[in-house]
Amino acid sequence: MFSNKLLVVVLALVPALTMAQTVPYKVIFDITSSDSAAQKAVIRQMRGISQSRPDAQLEVAIYGDALGMAMKDKSIIADAVQELTSNKKASFKVCAATMKRNNIDKSQLLPGVDVVPDAIYEIVTKQHEGWGYIKVAQ
Image 1 (cartoon, rainbow, N blue to C red):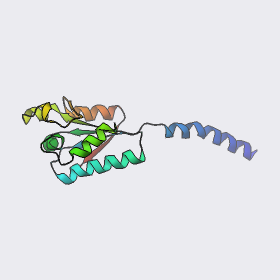
Image 2: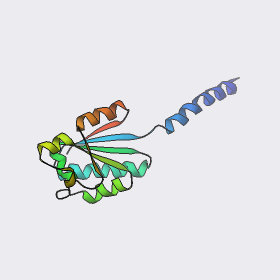
Image 3: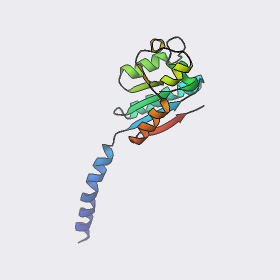
Image 4: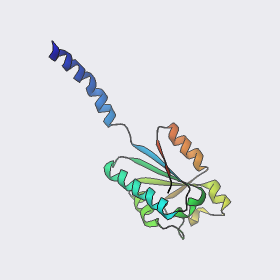
């Protein structure tokens, strides 16, 4: 009798465990800092996630003082950004409002970096879609 109940419990848990393993892994990073340590940290975090979860969807919302990390002539992480975007491991989205305030044109951005109308709106939208949220700070 006990073994029958145990079998029923195990069979009831199998679908739940299977579904838990197929839940998409989606994270949006929020960065506003010009600090090189913060910019390197977001790359390190994304690489770590990409290695442990190759199926992960990762995005960086860049605005405020972090704008330079996405620019051709200022980025200290340009190679890493291009590596992650070319491998389709991550996307980098720059705030158009920040670009406008700083008189920056899309042509000044690294290849593979996209522009969104508003980074905060992008973050909130992703959160509503079930993405995890990480504020990058040093």
